[in-house]
Image (cartoon, rainbow, N blue to C red; front, side):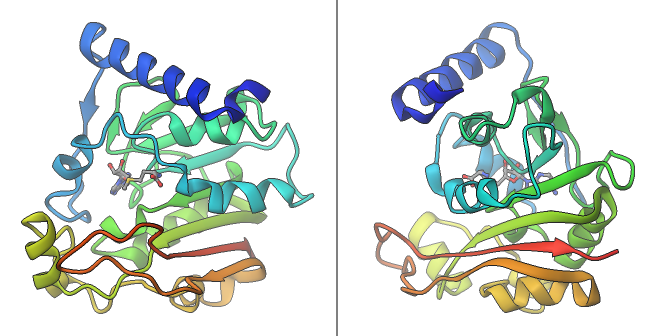
Length: 238
Ligand SMILES: C[S@@+](CC[C@H](N)C(=O)[O-])C[C@H]1O[C@@H](n2cnc3c(N)ncnc32)[C@H](O)[C@@H]1O
């Protein structure tokens, strides 16, 4: 598990396993969700082998909270591939207690399923990590209700989204299409307070509140290095 901290080793394992399981074992499966934006699966398949370290913004502070230990059961929603799982394991959480959930899966460690209808019973997890996935939901409130259902009372939820000041037209100019169908959303989730508000009176103690302090956003013209991120870790009251 210590070796997974080394990026070259970690990403090599993830990519080799993904290549084998997708190309040779033919294990790739996808699922549609009526609550997800239309391009969700096709857009994310393009980055299937991409290993992004941004989830550390959630995993590093989460792993310091003494409510969790190596027996904690942790669900990662929207990992896309196994990279988020290996990063969490590098912090001392055994792989056997970590599970992913995604509309895309090639791995037995990632259950194929929809975050708006999570295929687990209530109070099943000590913590849920939900990184850079909420923005694919046309009904974020429904996804949060499901998360509240499957996390244990007093359990932890860690949520991250990219900060953006881009409009639909800016996204179309930059990548040719917009991931979000803006007409379906009241407002894009872009701040820690908006995330906390989704939990209503079930938001307990806030352990981590990182409200994109630098406010760096991609624009119609360019992808910025070090884009800002919004991240919250909170306890769920039940
Ligand atoms: C941008 S990736 C995030 C990957 C990784 N967590 C990271 O932070 O880099 C978003 C992932 O969420 C998944 N996703 C989107 N909508 C979902 C849904 N309704 N249920 C489950 N997974 C979903 C996508 O398939 C994709 O794998």
